[in-house]
Length: 204
Image (cartoon, rainbow, N blue to C red; front, side, top):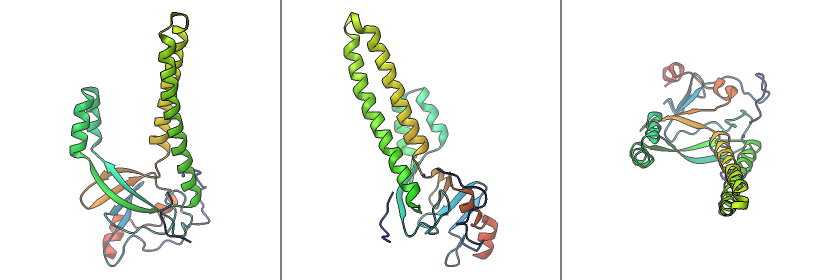
């Protein structure tokens, strides 16, 4: 199986036939590289995660999802209510990034690709429909229809953004520091096979 990165939500029952026995996976080479923290996965920058799908804990067979994640303190988003340009400037200044390599099965990788394709399709369609609506609104006879078409375009745009930002990502960072990344949306069975932070430190 190729190790090339192949870039996600049927939840299994609590009992997962793919789940391995609990072992000291949360440490590598004598240093704690990753562990669970409640419902979060905490990993050191550059840590090599297990060869298992982070979405269902099935074997990943060498398939990796390589991604450069971005994060900024959530409160910064409130600046959008004041001024969009101000938000963009502050977000650029305070955004932190981290490169991660995560195991993922082909099933969830394919699902992610389909969701991204749907997102782009809806965005492109919404733009085309909006332009058509604007054209209709210039004519008094079709002005009402034009407004309705533009509203429909807006709905398609919002739907695309919800799918792309809410469902397509495999994981979502809740914090990125100079040394660690905290991730949510990790399958419970995947987390269950990891050490807690206390156990990981005790083994290091």
